[in-house]
Length: 465
Image: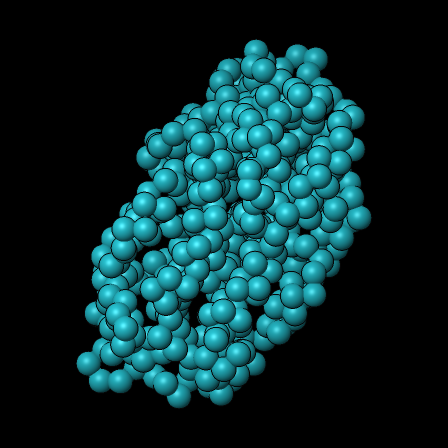
């Protein structure tokens, strides 16, 4: 019985066409004029899962758009590694989707077929304390006897599945450290399971319970128990964003970042640095999908209310990679457990585990931290931890290299319990439409592409008005 994100799911239950369509899309006729000036109805800041969805759907509603994305690609945490050795592929970020009409519609419009997720199949989990590289003797995850109780708790707070529209007062138990919440409701038997699914949330025993209940949510549990989770048939989640990029064409400014934003009564001016030189986007409305930390808004004309709200956020840290290994037993995933920690939860910073990918010689790497670490420090720690498996005599592993290594930071923006109780999310949601600016993304709901698309869909009428 396993506790990685993929295994937690198991236990819990035509680019050419897109390019042609882009030529006929509303934004196509409103191309950049001379001098690097771009005029659009809406400028979307951030081209991850949410920003890409917002841009495509705004075009559907007849609005011209420009998307500003720092990376050289759309998709954000959705990324796929294509192995040049075997020809196989593995998704290193977003893995699964809910079976919802808008999900099927979004994939369907770009001819990306979906199939039911049935787990990795045939894989075996071994339990290792990566601090020593040794197998933890006699360890077996407890049977998830508390799963029905957890489901009942989720049903007590159904509004958490829709966003952060919280009652006033906020129920006190949602503000408890999740470890205390779990003990109060006798959820100890599933803590290891929840830790394996809720990767990137830091120390789950200390985070406010509300964030765990939103991450391992009613939608997630219902989808798992009904066997309705979806994956892409070609095991390539990035295909959706590659085709969306072709559809958006020149309206997707990649490798670009905002240098200045001025929002005035006569419209919005967004200055952008791009690989092709500076651009100025004139638009009527702004949609921000990038993580709303104050650092994100460097150069923005934030007012005092906006600055006060966004300044309350802090975040966790999460990295993902693909390791090419020799000497690992076929079909074996290694789950990091603490030999001497509460509930055997892996101490952080550290591995969540090495996960079978289905591609020969490739294992997925997931690493988390409760505090800031440099990418180089994490990369070095990953390499040392893998090599320790061999020196400890546990597995004759040889690391050929990390084929891809990505930081998904900042990850999981949160605020303190006192802020939640004091109406933080009411004030956050109250910013929608202020200064002709709208917001969506994980900080406004949860790290779940399907649920974020639904959240964005419900916001679109206000943006498009």
